[in-house]
Amino acid sequence: MSPVSAPAAPGKLNEPVQPQAMVGYLAELDAWTAARRSELAALDAEILGRRLNALTPDMQLSLALWQAVKSRYDLLLVTWDSGRVGPAECARLSSLIWGRLDTGAAPSAQLAGMAVSLPEACRLSDALVAQLRQKLNLDPNAEQLARRLRDLRAQLERIREQIRIEPPASAEAARAQLGQLAARTGELEAKRERGGDIGGLLGPLEIDAARYERDLIVGGARRRENRDALARARELSDDLAAREQALRQLVGNAVAAVSPAPKYAVPDVAALGPVPNTRAAIDSYLGRLEQVGRAMQVVQDAYSGALAERDALAALIPPLRAKAEALGHADDPDFVALTQTAERLLARRPTPMAVVRQVLPAAQALLDALAEGGVR
Image 1 (cartoon, rainbow, N blue to C red):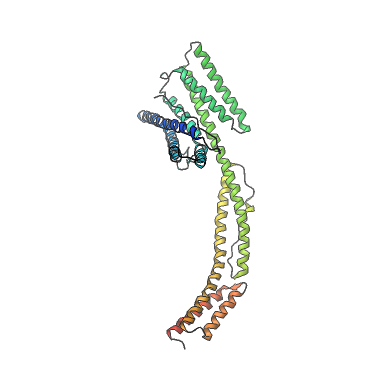
Image 2: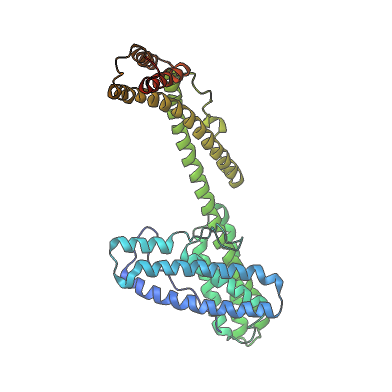
């Protein structure tokens, strides 16, 4: 089976797609996913039949990548709804095409968490399949050399586009690598025109080009992951800093309102230092931020609970008096004294909670005894 190439995706990130362009893209993507699944099935059977265990990870990655593309294609179909789309749906279609695929639960460790868009995933799949076909040596002479050279030129153009989004620090080296691949391709084309045999040279060049395209896509995905992690760290740090100030106010209110108040220290976000700029350090920093967040929750629960208990005790007095009124004991001097004492205690700042916890149950117990006739 001849390999297929990923279709060109319409639109751009953050720009709604045009419905006319979407019709053709969905048809091409449907054909691509079907053909790619057949290719992968044939390659998988070849690997299993020849017991090439070393190629199993590459096969697993290719299958997981195809599944991620197929899942996104299914979402596109649902959103497209046979063309019944408006501006909001066109914007969602663009997000589904150019946004990051959900690869967090992928069975392949290489793909799990990889930040690739749908077009990048399709191109990466093309590169991986080309690499697998060459490693299996399935088509050294089966495909026409002219077509393979055209495919190689198209791949070099994709690499050139990918290099445009490389950071300045690595762009020069990437252009140099592309120049070497282009020069090798040109030499093979010239040799073929002279009648030379390039079959043994074309395969290694295709492998190198496929591997380099894959590396560029993976590198871009990792850079996006790093940027996302840095943004998450900054956002979480700012959120916890704001939460810290609110907690300090809550602690002050609770200490002034109840006694004894809980004794927890509010975590100091600034003590963690500035947000780092390397991935390993960012991951460690995010872990410490999560610990701070959990500690803050403990503080919030403790001090909020103390204030809530005081309010709950204060809320018991009106229904207790209403019950006494209904039973005809609202004027009992001891009951009146106990409830008034509880009110005065609750009005103090800070409120002596240990005493209030004794007085109100005593008023309730006295009322119960009066109701049963055990007290006169």
